[in-house]
Length: 107
Image (cartoon, rainbow, N blue to C red; front, side, top):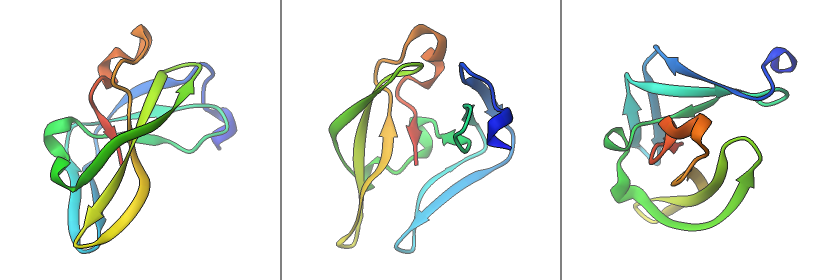
């Protein structure tokens, strides 16, 4: 249950392989992911930058602020003319507690 996840959120190593596809292309694939568990939210998975096809990302643009992790920026995913708006986000300068996420992508 997402209601049993911690507050403030927890950052954990994800040991299972993670893979994201869009429009027939692999956007991200890793065996070295991280996940954030936060009360009332589904798990959020993060990929290291080297495991994300940045050539499919358009941005960053816009943003939002998280009281726990800091300021996020958003990217569209574009593959062969198909676009998924704001489908990826990252924390370019996360707060100290989540410093491991700097430059990583949530896809």
